[in-house]
Image (cartoon, rainbow, N blue to C red; front, top):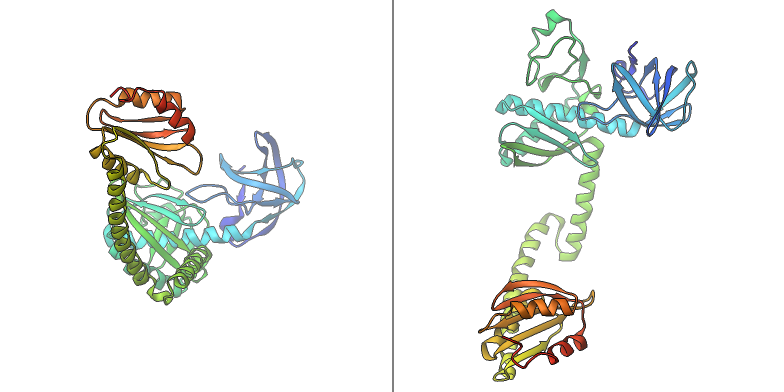
Length: 388
């Protein structure tokens, strides 16, 4: 006996009475089957409902052989009458997403002839995959058309037509489907085969927001959100923009221009600081000129600056071993030589001081776990020419 699917009779039904048909121990709880249920089982890109049966938590809902299985925390006695209560807020959010996705997919199919090849409701956004390339610049126009359907508060009709009627319905599908086929129709927006739950009228969706359309596996992957979820995402973006506005002392509608100005200022400052750093490194190198192989410690160098200083010293000395301490402990290093092969020295250094690194014969870079005193002692124990 198939479970009576109350969620198809009334998608807004959140509380109902039913009888327990069976209860079976499962790996993660107890699989309870009722004679009727308003809990929608996972399927078609839509998650299964959660809630309670006589106060017992329902952790997930699945469909097996036409029967809806409620995964419960505790066992329920067969024959018992239970009251089911859905976690309605997440169910309603999923219905908003699903109905909004239908309209977006319907509009894209009509405009471009592309099919929806994948659909997933994530924690924040929906992702939809299409089998063709949708220009990102078309998103505002698509979004405007879909929201026009939302604000007209069109009825959403869900039904299973008779076989002869089904043959006359031009529903959206990648392939012909055997009867019975459940059809979801939003007048002017979409007619599609679907097993999910939907709002009763498009006005319940409130808002559809398209965020991105990027190339994916020869087609397009789109991100979007509808209704309450779209509001949450947009509120989060608004709050971040408010903080940016304060940081830049700019109006909220001018933060983009303010960020561009800041990037330009930072680029100019970086250019000046790099020039100053190179002059400082040249002065340090001049101090080291003619000293043979040099071991040097300088604080606060990133990897690029570390190599630049080692190169500058190596130009005027036999070789350079430059180290800079790291906040997490130990030191990063760069070894430079204009003659000889540094690879044996690099291996010896990292083995002795618990580090790692690599590079070319005239250049080695990496890190060691040792501090300055241990490193100086290591080099003091080498031949003056370090073997290079």
